[in-house]
Length: 276
Length: 238
Image (cartoon, rainbow over all chains, first blue to last red; front, side, top):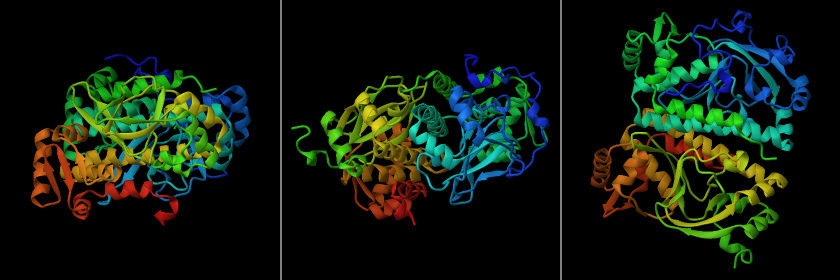
């Protein structure tokens, strides 16, 4: 399987599983509030979308940016919440969940530092129709929705950048829709772990088997079987409530084609040209 | 004929809701085309040069897997615009799009539409609004595929097709349905057989006739009402 060195958001080392955790893990995690929110400097911004802005656009937006921290499992938007803020993750991974009638929460997609949370608000949604939670803790850049929406309406470059990401997110969901029909739980598990690993940038992922089963909409027992297989093959190690990725290339071999297709679209997104 | 009679373009929800000026502009560069059943619109990786506003046709976007199997991602009828994302980011097509049910559509050049898009806030809002609806359909189907039985998904899908076909008799083979639902043909035959026994649908030489729509809604999973609610205007939801 092709390596994904071209993937821009992987440059910071998730491809190499020996890389130590990124420093942000040492930052004390505080619930986001106006008090804890701080104005970020350029070197504290690690979000691909914000970093792809032109220098001028970035510094225009900077006074509106605040760094906030999310704890693992914290709810970012609940169903029906209004979008007061949008968040550009720096090193956290968020997951968007759909609530089913029987109470199950199934993952629609994952968002990390390649994207933003709350994009629906920019294109006219009044309230969240899915739940968004922090899958791993970390920091994000917060901007008031109203401010960003006003800029978004008039700035074509920003529009095309964010809509390009929206298209990628849509591709991620689409692929997952197809994947759930056709691929085995084990393949889906590998694809999902790789997606989370790409975004988290660390090898030690705080995930229980219960969580994974919920996210994938699979039975807990089938996840346990699949994880045991992967552990036996030496691709990952499973500790209490943690999964440590040991052999990324091996996981890529076990993943379904969906993972490489998603990489293709993300890779393309960063190379895409603007409309104007 | 094109551009003179605005009535001929009626039928697409996005176009119908646009202000007169924008609609006239689209009429001036768009043309009506008639498409047959199962006509390919975009292949995987195609550069998108034309977009389609369906009038009475139904389009289906499908993911083709390496092993030759496939599963449908979204279904678009007269409420939408085919290739909406290309108008924002000029990306090549990521999936295979074809017509499920042939009919008329307004074909527009992407460059002409983008020119109008950069001038018209109304068109921008309408397209963004539609892309959000598309997102809810795709999200719902993604979770549905992992969660609900083939029988439920079959009913859900048939309701979507029925809505957009606006016709009780729909030309669909079991083969096509199996490809769209990512299931085996035998599975579809079983499910369709059961629905035929309960007189919900009638099946005759590649044509499905919907007899009892209410029953179909009952047999379908919750996803149908979720998708419908997302499509309805904000006022209707509350």
